[in-house]
Length: 339
Image (cartoon, one colour):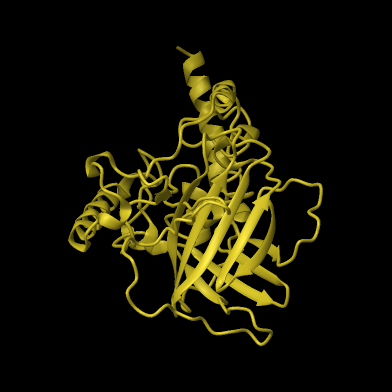
């Protein structure tokens, strides 16, 4: 069974999200590392022929699957760097046991979605205990009053902007999420670990970086300059990047459907920091004073894997999920009308 058919059958119900964050430029940046300060000599990446740090190749975040965004409540006052190796190993074991136990329900409560070897996210390693690195308490800052009102006003409406999921409205395909509809996972959704399709390809050329995502097969083009941004909004945003030493820093704005119901002025600042020949520490700082009371940062680790080539994501050709979601809703309505 192809990955693409599986993706169509489980969209909207099975994406296991996991990520972590870093503060705005101008603040002291808290890099979302696995936890412990490095004692070895800092890694120096190779250079491209034109002199930029070379981070090209195939990458994956599959081993970060299952990491909670925020610090679990049972970890008390501990900070990310205070989690010992043995404690992290126990947390990873428990996560993997839960993932295997929940396997039968991936495709839905009643249908299931096949054996675990169909998926990529079992027996993963995980690099950290949770993903939010700033604030230090590991919690996403509170919403502003305006954001709370915006969220309340949006409840009960269609999920075409990216919500939806099992149990959501299905009066029309427009009620379903953009992921259900095989359009996009948006950004940073495209960077988020999922049950499959976790491969990425980074390609560099003078003055530009391109990132291709296996899941829904999108490409971000990131100019490395300060050129004016077009007056347009896209699902992946409009990006501009630059190098700070060996770290690629990318700022994205102009989102059509902002992350976590953010405002139109949302800014996302990524950092791609090479820390080993086959490892990049990726972090994202979320900056939106109209939505959160202060910036926050989360992150994860990308691992280079030449064997993780990008599969074609032919979602539309086999998107039985959309037809089945809508037809099931009509069947439920017809059954209710006969009572």
